Image (cartoon, rainbow, N blue to C red; front, side, top):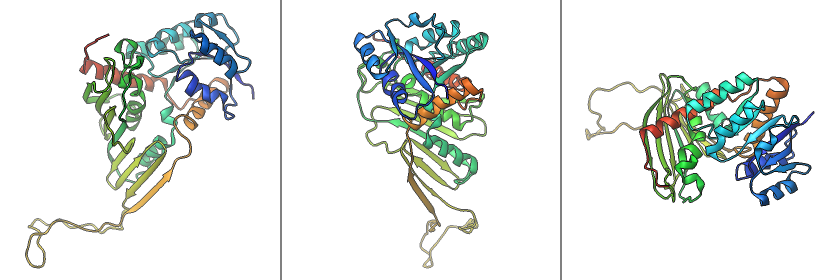
Length: 356
């Protein structure tokens, strides 16, 4: 199998600690790092040690004239995703861009149109769709095991402070642009990326951040014939015990990224209760409340893999198979653009004062 040659832009927490870990894993049978662009000299030296045989440059523009690069991975700062991706597409490179895809839907559309015009591929790094916890939940929704899903609750919560560049609006920071593409994307996935989705409610606020971008977000999404999707991204939730919960007409599924549990009933095991219009009473005529012992089934298990291991491997496998074999990618770039539509709408509904 011929490996493809990568140019990687940025060696920060994403470029080095997520993408870079994949490049160095034995499971990476598809790509070699040919060149790294990084303005920080110490990180360039680190890249030389960590990716044997690669070259390093300070300015990503030095890559523009290279003819031996199969794919550019743009892991730059969030506020430069659009501009840098556009430059590489214009030069005829295939590009993977980190989330967030761009600042707004117009920029996403511009990049997608440019990629089509230039005859190159554009991918958005939204690996959460390839995680076991999302795929299992989506399968449950489709197979009906816990019935008709009425509500999907997604929690990306914790209790922690941040004080880095990703807390600044001017750098496209804040919980919704930074963390939001994962839970918002998953939420849209449960709406089947309907073109008729609607942001029913949203609220952005600041709690523990040192910057001026939100660290609390509440978003409710709907679409015709789909469940209500309730999303939270909070820095002040000290007792969040799940990432994803489905409430169905026959049961509940709840998961973290590493494990799940499920409680449900099976048709036919619990006889239907006839409607009684009169006041319920006990044998001694005292008032009674509706109560019964339903026959439940329960399951729980650990997942194999995580959003930063198995899901990353599968993302790059998808990219390789699309570039080399022409296999249709699982993740659609136009769906990543819808995620930005939601983010753009939420920020329009909740303008925050800029302090820096």
